[in-house]
Length: 461
Image (tube, rainbow, N blue to C red; front, side, top):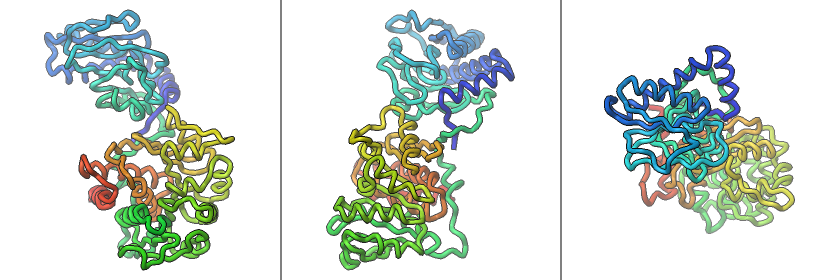
């Protein structure tokens, strides 16, 4: 995993580094990193033309140092002030955006760039908020971004990915302490997920799934299949109101429970299990809602609450009451609409807004739960503020049932021994990687469980 740091965290690290080695040294290192990236994009130096838009702050200083180095290599450099720019930049072979850095707030309209000319941004593309990823209308669209010291949230969220291009992190000697936000990477799969022990048995990683309803079995099938493919050695499958004979043949072991008042029956089965998945396809009957709330409140093992389960928790104070007595934080997996209901107070619904890290953290702290806020970049936050970002997903996952698959993967990872925060974050990453192995068009939820198994198997060699 890589650390991701907010504007305030990096400002403090900058000040400490300046006090230790001096501003000129840091600017020199940053400018050299930018010049190196620029020369790579130019291919050759002598006779090439570059335009550097350099503002007044340290970001502009980095651009001016890079401009000086490029001149010494034979590049013809034009420097421009962002306060007095033409509508269109002059013909050139490269544009270096050093107008505004991580401290930017407000509006900026970048001039148009000659067609086909690459743009190299320093730290963040000018006009992009480095914390939220929200871009103003005229923000720079870069081919590459050289960012100093560590990744910024805004490069990974919102408009960031479409504005920053390829991101290169240059340490430049700023000793950034690990912060509270992390980016999940492929190497974390093998590092976090324990392999099977030689003398293990199926019950060591058992997961119980409470999902579906009579005649509505799709969500339950997706969750149970995903839990199996993600490494749960035993999956118990409960569809309230359905008898085992009603359920299709499966490696999961079907269990009959009442249609509404099923909490006691499920609680009695949890003694041999390591995790509980509850919610996909359950419906919203009052008896179902009551049973979900009891199970979430009383189950002493890790619980994943998804889909109809989130609706059953209720809003605001009701959800806090259900979740408040748990010894192990539950994992909640809302999309934006479900987030709004969970966060509602006094009958008012709130969408997550631009800062999705802050949104996930606020709800996690308020409910005392792990919150996995789904999106193009998924934010997974703990009540203490520790947060993971997941960027492996894509629009391929925008199809019915994929969230049910995710809940099953989280359940398996919890059963395999991961703590709730890492289980949720790693499951989201694997889920996105699995979609990337599937069909570019026409991927359906039923394709994903086997692809999940391929991703995990590949990580473990």
